[in-house]
Length: 627
Image (cartoon, rainbow, N blue to C red; front, side, top):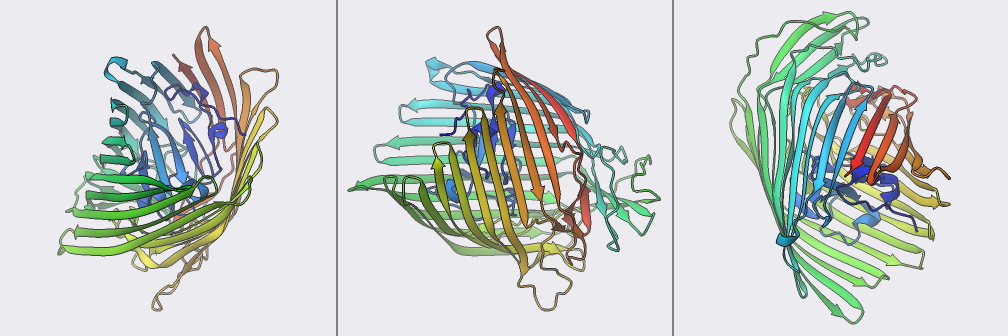
């Protein structure tokens, strides 16, 4: 069996994602993460954009991910990890677990910096009050951020989680957390002319203008109740998520033929989005012979309002080099009228689950989703879109032998369409929800007590969102992703743990309407093959000293909608050294990490001939103290 580190939830000195992972599909522990998938990419799609987020198993409409001040860990629920998980969704589910569970008083401080010039600190504490039956977590952080594109920002993070044991079988949790940034400069976005190779964009150099900066905020608060009474279980949560900024900019560098680049800004006025969401699930368990059964009734909903648009286009002129820095004076900003969007969604669900010990498990569910979006465009009549759909799901797992088990599932969903990119003609427009479907199946093999292998097949179909001839970002046809995904996790000897994963897929565009031409079969920014290998090796006879690393590989990607431009395949190597020990009775961890250690360069497609350079090598140092 793989050894798993189980640190106190507030003491991050012993966090280790490699030794905590249960598969290679996606794990976040404290400030560390690994896996071929994550909150923004599962099987080629984004669970965040799709709205498939959960907080401790309950639905939440997130406008920003929980920060490390309130989050202890997160897991991607796909394949075997989704078996028995209530009401699954296509694109997978990202399930966040919050802090505030420790009954022991503790604190942790993290001081960090990197060679980009960023630095900061965080302080997190677990502060139980036994006399009141409370467990609490509180955290604060401040940083000066600098990224690979040379942009900078100052940020503050905060969080508080409090759990009250009302009785031996009921708990009430409340939390609040968020992030505030100041003086955040706009990173450059590069647009090629489409006639040749992408010009090599600079890294770690901000191209200006310096006055194109913004301040942003996001906050997340909620209340969660859990109660168990004999055969009945009630779980319910209500959440409020909000995000906004003082103003924002799209900083474009547009190639206009050899040796000529137009500098262009798109300035947006103050924007804001807010959402109230939640879920309640009532379950009753009962047993018939050897069969454990569970029936669950669910209701979930959200109300989301947003204000966007009103942009001003600013031509800053031409330069003769892609890395030319602008030092122009501020331009008077004259915004136009903004647009508004309101989304309402109500979902009712019923699910049946049956489990025959460890031999087999079966679940079948049905949801009824009522969705409506009211769009009030600037200077145009109001429009409303509504949809009512049935969403079935079925999943099953069976254990063939002590070491081999099978799983499979089918699920339909109604998922968020996301927001149009800022450089689109309809930039920052909230897109409507779309119908999606997924089925998968696979095998889990426990080769021995230290090694587990998962091999699965998946097939997902969603709308293909891309740019039309008028640069409007909208649905054109469908996008279907099929492929094989693999996970191997193994402890080799007493010192080495390896986590390896891969995706061998076939993302393709299909069902393009006949009148539309110039659409290739390969979706932009999707690799057919992705591989990742993570390891953690504790050095013998050097107590507390370990070496860790990650090797990542991505095959080539389409860089334009018509597929005439592609990027090459690339690989990156990350390495780190960790030393864990004590100063008197105070545990500490010193971590030296280097990402993209070979300094590999590749343009990353983010739109039709739109790209960003892959981040350059970064070396960081963390000192973590557990008090």
